[in-house]
Length: 120
Length: 378
Image 1 (tube, helix red, strand yellow):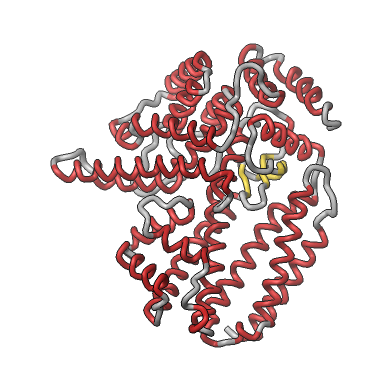
Image 2 (cartoon, chains in turn yellow, brown):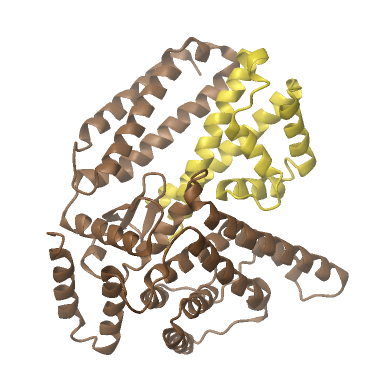
């Protein structure tokens, strides 16, 4: 058995998170007043999962280990980001954090896509 | 990147998606759900491309990086649709219909909580599934044989982990999470213990790789194996052993430098054997365990000290406990010796026939498949 099933789930979930996160970033940049208090459920779910030792979703698990390995987004930073989004106090730092997260998400997505394509 | 580039590329995506959309058959017996998913996804690609190209908000210079990611997502979605589902739908033949029917009957027999996948004999590798489209791809000629079809259940199980919010699958995912919590606690404790005193060379460095492998993928793969055992029965175990014989591999592999996607075959076999016992197939489990030992004698393989560190017996047993619990909690029915469903019986009898009278097996297989599929007009 190959691992296309797992990779397919990972890629599709990452694509969903990436879509939501990038759309949210666009909103934050274009209309910050309207967007900052309402992070989409998917973005909130992703950030919550990253703060968990054993995330439920296979894609968040992989992203979380990748971030830990690179020393990026330690738990404290995830916690800060989550608190900022929850409280609606998101400013430039939050946007920068989300931009960085979107980059990491994109890299993992690219990795999952490459693994998936090699299998097809 | 210039606006003209975005404009031209997005127009190309739109045109490509429209061409693919025109190639999706309006109706295919037993595969309408896949046709519909393709149409819906292609439609969303078209709308996405038009929006990214034409909507005013995307012209803003400050958000071009995000716009590029969204464009890449459209490309990714389109590439996957084109190379798997649309390609499969454009060449559907009798084998595809037969295999799709097999998956559907098996899903009914084990009370699979999701729609059964469509199966296409277009894989260039082994069995695989696109969990979003629920499309299983198997090699070209595997649709003519029975011995590996038990693996369809493994692929179907992957679909249970793909869905993020469907309440019908949450219990299975919760069971997996329980296992992952145990894995995390075990290796965290092991890391602390190893830090206290002298330990074998490199063990401290390898432990985090094993922990990550367990958390990232091994636990999922073992759960999918268990799903196969509980849905099909001993035939799943024999199909696994057959695959181990076919492919060169290190049966007790413990990764050293990087994580791997699948646990070692010896660990998978241990879980399958334990799962068979749990499902009430004690004799068959013993037979499979003995055959596995025979296989190891043949390949002259034996575990080293790392193996028990990497795959602790206790964890493997806990995987089976939670896998069994999760399987039942999502309402799936564990295969039983009698009465066995028609598809389950076919897959298990195939292995009995193959093992007891291999010479006559090909003729038996052809006759058994014709009889099974004739009931469905296939």
